[in-house]
Amino acid sequence: MTAAPQPLYGLELDPLTMGEVLDQARTAITARRRFLIGVVNAAKIVTMRHDELLRNSLLEADVLLADGQSVVWASKLLGHPLPERIAGIDLFENLLEVADRDGLSIYLLGARSDVLDKLVDHIQTFYPGLRVAGSRDGYFTEEQSEEVADEIVASKADMLFLGITSPKKEIFLAHYGNALGVPLLHGVGGSFDVMAGVTRRAPVLWQRAGMEWAYRLLQEPRRMWRRYLPSNTAFLALTARERIRPTATYSRAARESIDG
Image 1 (cartoon, one colour):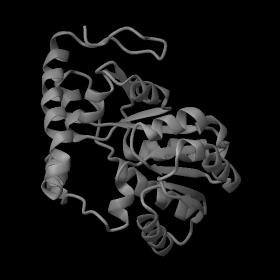
Image 2 (cartoon, rainbow, N blue to C red):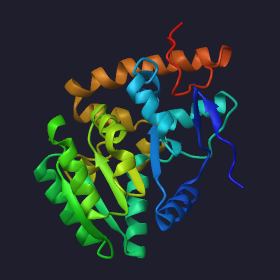
Image 3 (cartoon, one colour):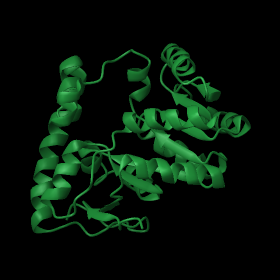
């Protein structure tokens, strides 16, 4: 029996292990049932409090997982423990292994065209049992979105991986997600760049220490400090507040202010 979702920061996070997520993914693909995966880290939890589009995209997910180690630690502190961190890139790699073993097809949407080419080469080399049903870089306009959606529909892929940034990803999925005919949908953030060899992932020890964000900051300090330092500070303050006054669980119909 699947454990009940854990109420954290107004969201309901699924207390699943990697193996349990993969089992659910296989079941959904076999049944051709939508399985939209949502992941949260400290930055997303902070941002979604004032970003309704992001918040509603998380509420729309069929499974919502802790991508950040800080979220797992906070879940234990707040009395709603999650079993483990499920990093988006780790889930991406595990799903590629499933596709490789089961002979499934994938569609890749995102990144620059040169990065995408390297990614496709990597996947075809290391996962020869899967089929790349199609790919498209992430630099398309709003007017081209319907054309992109039609390409995905025509591919008849079993899995769609989106390496495009927020809120473009959320807008695309909100408009077209249910009509794509792809059972599994997973936004993987910067995983395309990592797997393509364009950027480096933090060493395992940094990951286990919850310092993956700091490793990224060291690589791109000018760009990343604006993302990580304010959001990490806000997350600590928010967690302290949650111990005293937990946020009521959000619903998609809610439109009230969440900062009051």
